[in-house]
Amino acid sequence: MNVILIVFDTLRPDCVGAYGKTAPWGAVHTPHLDAFARESMLFTRAYPEVLPTLPARRALYTGQRVYPFWNADYRLKGDFVGAPGWGPIPESQDTVAEMLRDAGYRTGLVGDCYHMFKPSKNYTRGFDQWTFLRGKEQDPYRSGPQVSDDDVRKWLAPELFDMTNMIGQSVVEFTRNCLRNMHGRTKEEDYFAPQVFTEASRWLEQNRDADNFYLAVESFDPHEPWFVPDFYRRMYDTGDSAEQVISIYGSTADLSPELLRRAQANYSGLVTLCDRWFGHFYEKLRVLGMLENSVVIVLSDHGHAIGDGGYMGKRGYPSHPSVFDLALMVRSPDGAGAGQRSDLLLQHTDIAAQILDFAGVTPAQPLHGLPFWKAALENRAIRDHVTVGWGGAMTVIDGQYWMNCKIDGTGPFLHDLAAPDPFAANVADALPDVVRRMYAQGVADANGEFPPFLLELAASQDDAPGCSALAARAR
Image (cartoon, rainbow, N blue to C red; front, side, top):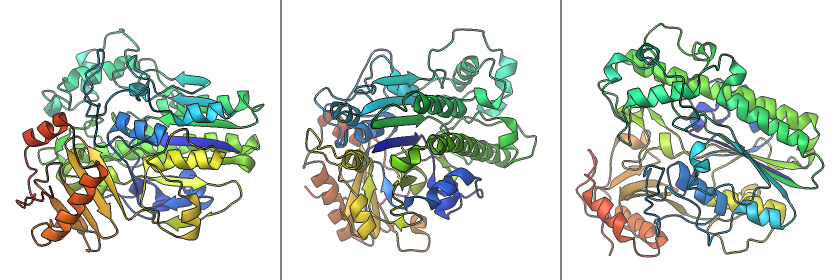
């Protein structure tokens, strides 16, 4: 059996029509993913194990827990410090691709998530072929031609010119570098998602002779910056206001309604672009006759707040479904689970375990992740909660509550998922025993202790506005 894993960076499930939700700014057009969902089982309660981009992929590519970031305080030459765990896969951990290759699978990776391909990283381990499509964000793809201030102003509103991004870089220079990398891309096929899925389709054609293969397809879209052909954006905003393609990683209170709407429209347009080219790839699978013997998994690594709760960006404290909810759909070639929904609590590590289970490969090392497909078909749980780590904060989610605090137990938020609007109120003060119980679960999932650097990070981080004063310490 072939296994195909497709990862969309920053794809929100409420922006996929099949989920039956609607983003706060309106519905997003995803006909190809919706059609795929009708042939698949759709999972409604999938979460990262850790965040953001690179730590999430370490969990996904190994099936091993990354939280609570032991030996993960990376300071690598040639890269910024993105977050705890922002580094390579440890040499001591086997990757899914390595295990499948050793079991006789032909393995391939096609993607444009440039963080994975930096010289200090090793996410290509185990792949017989890996193809890196260049030019995203700050990938040092081009040193020229230089981009003028006038060209930058076409994409960056004047009120944002003095901003710096989350790593302290001027957003003017960030935008300039993005435009330099994209120079000469004039038609839809030149954009990143089309390139990724075109190249992945080519890989399928070239590897038809493989008895069994594992193909990972990594689309950095719809991650910001939200550059998209104009006609996709106009599906969601026909106005002529200034462009807004970057994420401000902060409050949207001072952002004009027009700029916020434009950011949402560009993101929505980029999701629709991804959907259209996923459809191209999926039709290639059909034409080649590969759907009859291939499991296809469509997954996101995380989402992105675009005005949700008055915030734009990603963060782990306070945490929110706009960032933590994952899109996950699994299509089995025998039609099992087609059109069904599952509310199993799942994490990225479970995807790795299930890929190996589909392939009939026993992991070389015990995994944190658990195979879940049979349980989903039988409607039985595999765990009663998940713990998600991001920096100095933890989020613990179970069947009724969502608890988020710093790892030292301070500054907690507790949300009752059964409430009509769960994130409208923090009920931590009213339910201190629930906070303590869930905090204890998060500590237990860290094997009872945290690395010193992470405790220092938590201690230096301000309590988030609106958090409870309750001390939820369980140790």
